[in-house]
Length: 85
Image (cartoon, rainbow, N blue to C red; front, side, top):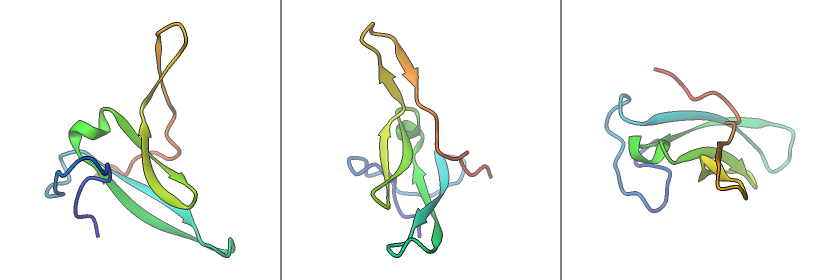
């Protein structure tokens, strides 16, 4: 169950679907024969800065923008489209 923002440094509680973004991602199981779907939520402030990705079989956040050596910022692609309510 979603209870707070996935960003570990954020304490915003999940209360409304209209605030932030819900991500639906497939998480591989340890035996690699199955996948399970899990839901993650980022609050409005965090979803402007981060995206949710699967890393080492766990949902985690990473910066939405990569900074190039030229100083230009490029938005990273999301693994899956966010769940739209």
